[in-house]
Amino acid sequence: MQDFIIGRIKSFGYALKGIVYLFRSQKNAQVHALAIPIIAIWGYYLSLSASEWCAIVLSMGLVLALEAMNTAIESIIDLVSPEYHLLAGRAKDVAAGAVLIAVIFCGIVWAIIFVPKIC
Image (cartoon, rainbow, N blue to C red; front, side, top):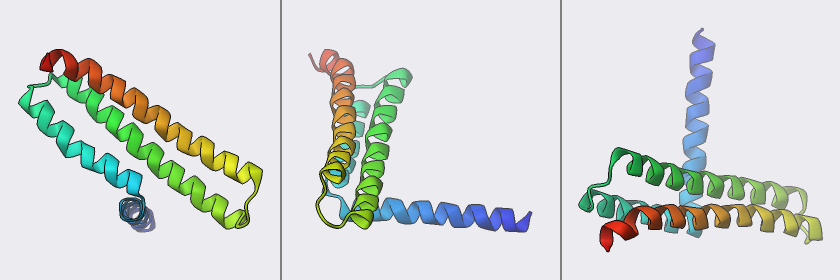
């Protein structure tokens, strides 16, 4: 049982190490993280409902999680294909595209929630 607990604590530490790396090294993750307090202040000021907060938080979490996956995919590709390869480039582009799709839909969710309250 003790080994299990120690293993979970180590796993948590590795995950935190990855999150720190993400925000220290990836400019897009930093931009996404900057949006969080701005949106939170707007949400507080506009008195969002619990369901609106859930939509906002889930959309932000999705974008950040996909940004982390994109970073992981790019790191793996750089390891296995240090020279340019069409398929490596395509994989990186598609992973970045996944983040962009999430950002676009996140923006749509935010617009649906915030625009009526602002107008």
